[in-house]
Length: 173
Image (cartoon, rainbow, N blue to C red; front, side, top):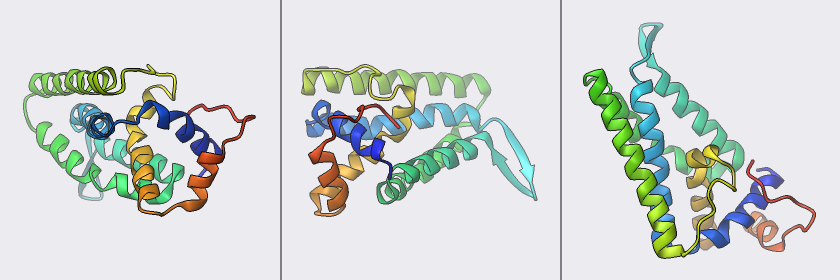
């Protein structure tokens, strides 16, 4: 866990206080990943007799980044990536234009869901100020970290987040 993760979580928390908005962000992250993974799953190579797609590489990269930020929440975040990958791989078996339409439709729905949740339930929005598109991949790490806090876990990290550091820049990792 990096100091920057605590700083970003501190900045992120007040913008995501509503439970419905948090749930929309959680689901939205996996929808975002799916919408990229489905077309990436079309790119396949055989490695030692096993077929590997670019979607596998995406999932591995997302998992490693999530674990790098906060290992417990990162591992928990990786669990829903398994069915997300499975669905992306299944979608990739459809004709290419169908895969593209599915990916675009899911992405449009994802943005409507997350932006709508911010506007309706948070009455505020932050745009991409907390990390840009990278945040779309790893937002469940933040949400799961808050769940761990609620369970009384990660007390040291929680203390760092709540204590704050005026010298720290609250930017994404």
